[in-house]
Image (cartoon, each protein chain N blue to C red):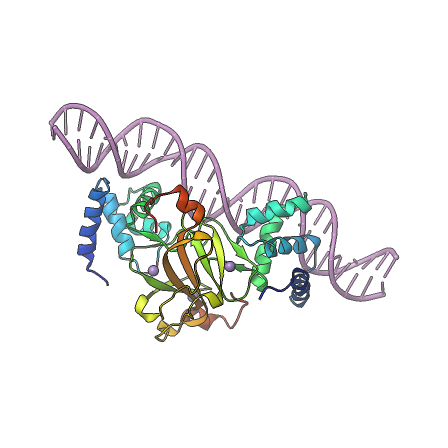
Length: 152
Length: 152
DNA sequence: GACATTTTGATAGTAATTATCGTTAAATAG
DNA sequence: CTATTTAACGATAATTACTATCAAAATGTC
Ligand SMILES: [Mn+2]
Ligand SMILES: [Mn+2]
Ligand SMILES: [Zn+2]
Ligand SMILES: [Zn+2]
């Protein structure tokens, strides 16, 4: 499941070529920085790490490449809703259906999903208070208007 | 599961009193606006809805009260990571453990979780491409430093 | 290596959110 | 019911995260 680093970097180079992306020094360093991070880093964190290796790098370059990589399917974003706060008053346990295109969020009742549970003990003394499932996909409207555009 | 509106508003009033929060006109209108929204609205959307009823309301008031409500457990945020983009290079199907306090995200292997699946047909022609579980709770470090502060 | 095309770095600009502060409304005491 | 205290509000400046612009530099192709 966890291929070795150089193998993943080689795969990265191939996918860049396939996607017609120039293989720049910056790109490889940025990609490696994410690859080596276990903590699901923010662009700022990546910027700090990359700056240690390429002091002259611009924050804009980091952001631009992160988006390039996401579009090419080389990286993924943890949540589709980092753009702004999204609220709900429904405090009952339930799940969500999210459209990767328009970001719509639809509630799914708890009873509509097979019970989720962690088989192993949570790592490192973590106390779990709730669990919910996020189903990602395309809503009907978006599916109609787009016939496959590299999606997470 | 879906109590009637006025009942929920009455519950809201009680919880405000219990939490020592003044019952202002603005608060009730804001809370109702979220309660009546099925679409997991952003603060801007709530602001627009509320403005129709209280034209002089300030956007800052909407934001402040939303946070007051979240802190009091009256509302919940859909994602704990709306502050900034969080990345991952792990493209395999897996799940997450998230600390509600420090926002740390830890990977859980797919094999550690009972298989998730939707029992019913997805509503309205939604095409699901992937599903992942988010377990929320407190990491060991945060559990140590906080003995219960109203958490989602 | 020369040329066309991308990408980069610097920086100005924008969107979402938060802080500040003087004014107003809610809660409480009398 | 009125006065007083305290919490909340509205206007707006400030901050944070991100995006657009554009001239200079690096890539890829022949
Ligand atoms: Mn919901
Ligand atoms: Mn992950
Ligand atoms: Zn959609
Ligand atoms: Zn924590």
